[in-house]
Length: 129
Image 1: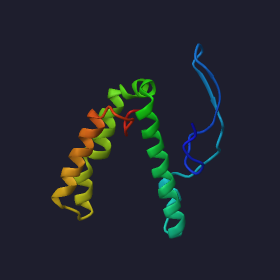
Image 2: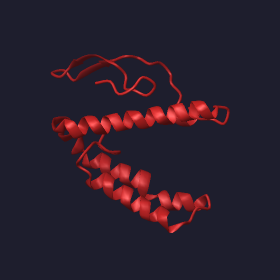
Image 3: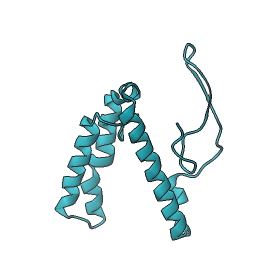
Image 4: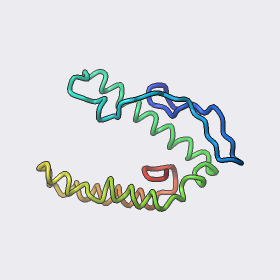
């Protein structure tokens, strides 16, 4: 199932499970999201990118909610979950404070996010890969 055109995974060309070989399309050099979203990007383009990314992630969540085999295949990656929870949420309040944002809800939201990454089993989440 394809989840999007603007944001998508590279197309699979060949997978050889016995020899652990995966051949995927070469999409060439693509800028990171940070590089792509520079000040000169107009608001309409930024909204298009944001909506496409949100739709892609929603599609991945929906697929794994319906396909428990796929969820089980990726969902047990505890090392990735630990790393992602600490990287994205464990330091969020500290990083926000350095930018002058010290509201208590930031630390509370970070704790909720960290907990969801570590304990969510309904759909693939940040860190399952």
